[in-house]
Amino acid sequence: MITLYTAPTPNGHKVSIALEELALPYQVEALSLGKLDQKQPRFLALNPNGRIPVIVDHGADDFVVFESGAILIYLAEQTGQLLPTDAKGRSVVMQWLMFQMSAVGPMMGQANVFYRYFPEKLPAAIDRYQKESRRLFEVLDGRLADHAYLAGDYSIADVATFPWVRTHAWSGVAIDGLPHLARWLGEIAARPAVQRGLAVPTPPRTAADVEQTGAAIITR
Image (tube, rainbow, N blue to C red; front, side):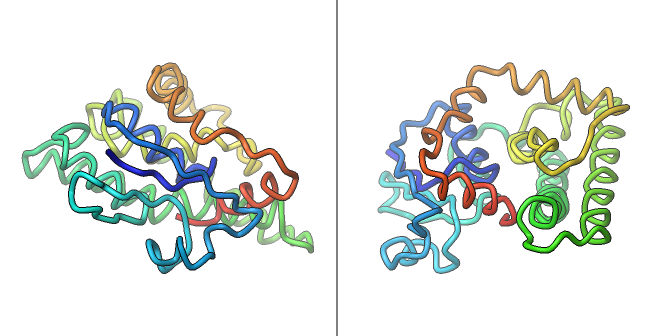
């Protein structure tokens, strides 16, 4: 059994989607970002950085894994799914996973901050991060022009990237003229496991939770 500490953000959804795709038994500890549950000592004992998601694998002596990309790799390696075992295939998945972790997530996160939350509207900052997010979408679209999924077969690279790209409108970034990216988004959104994963945890109920959940999109 796995315990998933999470909130309804793209990074949280990466792991709940993976758990559903891998059909692993898990229980959910939903954190209220608005109440700063992620900054409390109990949670900081699991992740000193105070960010979701975190898993505790009770079947492996309560082994703790934080950082969403590290969690995806751990789950894929434990199950032998969503990650090739040959060196080249694994490398391709890792390349696109790192592309999400180092580029798509941070750039969209900064677009969110300046477009949605920063107290002062700074057009130059908004434009910079929205344009860079769009450029990254164009990179994805080019890759998906001749690949069904980012690494060929459906993998943790897709699981990591989809929850971010699906929020493009919230970041103020259009996907017009990117047919391959749109096709990929639609196909992944239609997967039953993805739909179940996106419903974890239940949506935040307070205004503070809604605001803080959006703001938390800046993190990887």
